[in-house]
Amino acid sequence: MSGLLTVMSMIEEGRGFNAALYRLLAWFSPMFPIGAFSYSHGLETAAESGGVHDWDTLQGWIAAVLTHGAGRMDADTLRDAHRAASAQDLEALTAANRRGLAFRATSEMALEAAAQGEAFLATCHAAWRDHVLERWGAMLGAAGERVCHAAVVGAATARADIPLGCAMTAYLHAMAANLVSAGLRLGIVGQTDGQRILAALEPVIASAMAGAVARDPSAFGGTAVAVDLASMAHETQYTRLFRS
Image 1: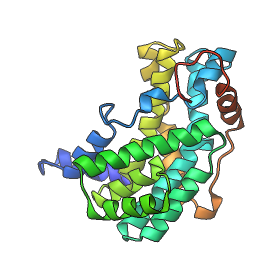
Image 2: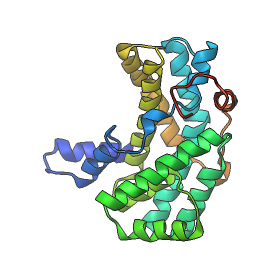
Image 3: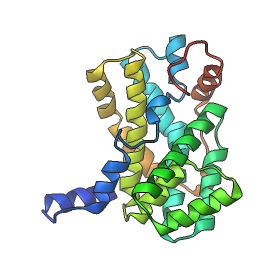
C-alpha cells in the first residue's frame, strides 16, 4: 500500500495536479474500452448451478479468484512487467507476458486475458503514446504474439511513473469490481450488497498485493480449481450473458 499512500499524501499536502493518478483513474475507468463488462470469469456458471447465490458466496468466490486464481497470477505478471518496463528490458517484459498468457486453464480465460490486453495496448497507442510500449507492441506483432492484460498494465503504469503498489491495487480492485458487477447483472446481489462486498474485500486485496510484491517469481501459479471447472462448463452452457 505504500505507493498508494504516497500518492494520497501528495494530494492531501496540496501539491497540485498528479499526472500518474490521472492516468491511473483513466485506465481503470469503466469508460476505458477493454470490454471488461463482457466477462464473468466463470461466475455465470457458478450462479447457474447455485454454487454462488448470495452476497456471502459471491464474496467468497471473488476472494478465491483474487488470492488463489487469476488475481494471484495477474498480480505476479503485473509485478514482473512493471519491473521490466521500468528497466526498459523488453525481453523480460515479453517473458512476463508469455507466462501471463500461458497459465490459463481454459480457452475462455485465455480469451479474457488476451482480448483485454490487446484492447488496452491499442488504446494506449491511440491516446497515451509511449515509445517503449510502441517498440514492445511492434515486437509482439512481428512475432505474432498476443498481449496479456496484466502485463501491458504493468508496463504502461511503469512507463507513467505510477508506483507498483498503486498499479496493483487499482488492477485488483478493478477485477473485484467487475466480478461484483457481473454478480449484479446475474441477480445474485443488489447494489448495496455489492458495495458491502467491495468493502469486505479491501483487506483481501491488501494482503494479495503484499504477497505478490514479496513473492519469489518461481512461485507463480494458481489453485482456484472450482473457478477453472466453472469456466470449462461455461464454454458449453446453453444460455450465456458473458463471454467467460
